Length: 258
Ligand SMILES: [Zn+2]
Ligand SMILES: [Zn+2]
Image (tube, rainbow, N blue to C red; front, side, top):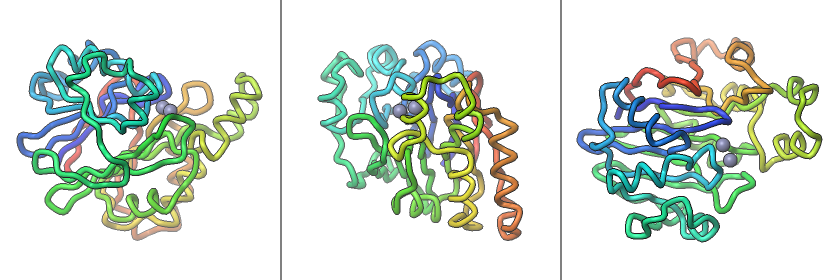
């Protein structure tokens, strides 16, 4: 498998994954036009996509879904409850495919598991994607670390892990109190420190790429997120080969091989 983040951050999220002839997106939270352009930047074509898998209905995950799906007749995969909660994600109902949460299925030679997560959305899921014995886990918008998060960190080759905010920056920042409370709650977003502690405690040498994702524009920075993770991992000499990077809201990351 190869994968990259076409975009990630509070303003828009879109992850690209390919295996042989099968290539697809997890979320399409930037405009359809930007997705097409960013795929071209990594030498890929939107017309070759096989589908879009939705994590949840928040706009930073679905902004480009409807236009992209209709333009290229792409199937849109989501849980029935997510669909019921937001029919506008894809206005062409013939393209909608319902998937069952916590049930792995086969898709063009790839195994895909949508699994439950704690987030204040309608039936939200994370994805674990497996092919040829390698796993890519896409875990953003998680308010808290569950047994599933730990499990799909431990045996993955590549993990997109939420590192949303620096707690002090959020607490001292401009957001209204209700929003701070929402982000900090166990159904909000994972902080830099929580992400770093998770990897320190449960990361394994099997993990090749850790991509810090869904950074807040107001309450975080690439340098702070990276520094927090690296400081926490300093004691884990067995993870010395792990490549830690940060996904970007404006440009795709490099393609990584799982
Ligand atoms: Zn969300
Ligand atoms: Zn989000």
